[in-house]
Image (cartoon, rainbow, N blue to C red; front, side, top):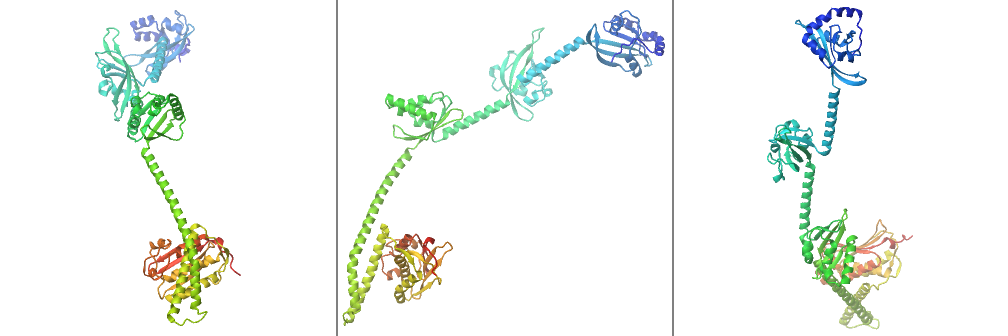
Length: 640
């Protein structure tokens, strides 16, 4: 800080009394005159800080009258004398009641031996300069802010288009520091790929705007800027000196446009390659794009299928609309417009040329619409063929069912008609066979009677099977349900087949728990199930084999009645045939035993009538196991 004190300590004052002359002598006459004549405040002080010479401006600054000889002191001079080094400072002082800014220097005056003999102080008023500098800095700051807001970087080039100035932000825009671009040519660092005749040249000397400038930085990344520039001329001579302008980084914009163009191209390729007709409409219902398939399916509006045409215009010119009366056309157009605005399920529409189209419409998120039309003529043809085939199949099924019912009715009638004479034949042959009214003296007659009786019984069994199977097919079999004593049923059926088993040399066995549950079923039909299985097993088991009746109660409470034989067995392919009516497996055993082939099919129907299932497991040469499984709700309590 400056001191304005006008008094010195007594000792220092006496020391300075001898110094003024030597200090002034060291300064010189010409310097002394210049100091006194200067408009800037100046002083000369001795090494101890006492002012020995000061001009009027300095005395006025320090608060004294311009012509006053009152002693002054400059403490800063003492510091300079002690260090021998200049001292600089800035301070704000009041002059005439107004603050002024001064730049102050205190410089030593040295003799030939480097000793400080005097100190010269200079106060330079820089108020105006500082104001101008501050204004310039504010202006530069504003310019820099505007530049950042309006563009990315500022540039200047000379008449040979070599950069003379580039703002620091060019590093972000072009990936190059400003100092590396100074002196380099604008055209060496980049190109104007789309400029053409507007590219700036020294000869053109014309302003330019929005020129795309392509560069590649040291990182090999391609960048784009939009340049605006104006020519610069020397204000004194008017000579062309170069260009200056601004640049805006548009790399992301260019890349986004490239991606959008690529996506547009891919979309166009995808739309063109699909097999359906495709049309995209904008929010204003005008056509944006469509594919060639659209033109193929709607040839009458090919000339209208261009961007900008409205959906309603296209609908009004389709053949479906043109061939209607004016009233019908307006109703049709109104209906199609409503479906277009509020799409629902796909619309099937037949074209005048006979083709069928499936038209689907969906609204897009921006308010537009997508229309897809598929040619379904072939599908419609196949649907027609399928409908015809189904109708023929239904008719054939009805005819087959009618024929089957007629067959069942015929078999039932024939069976009833045959049973009456057969009963008479069996009864009379049994009387003669048992010689109830006298002996048959001729042995051949007795043998004939036994044959007649056995043949009659066999024929009656066949007729009964046919009749029962016909009833089962017609759904006329009913159950007379009661509690069935299984051990009694097994014993009864075993006795009935024992004679046949003895003749065939087959052993009959029973494998069942000592105590069996009560089965709630039709007792007669249960006997028929077991008897059919046993007789069938005996017929297909060779001499020395065995047939076993096995009974098991499952964990789920169901009851399995299984007949296992050690006979010829079957292949997996033969099992379905064995369950088919009127089918006999062609092997040695079937040729030895006659039958209708209804035993297993009828048994299966009887088991299913009880809500159960019939299953067969078999292996050729090892035997067959047939299981009648009764559900748990037919298995009652164990007898006490």
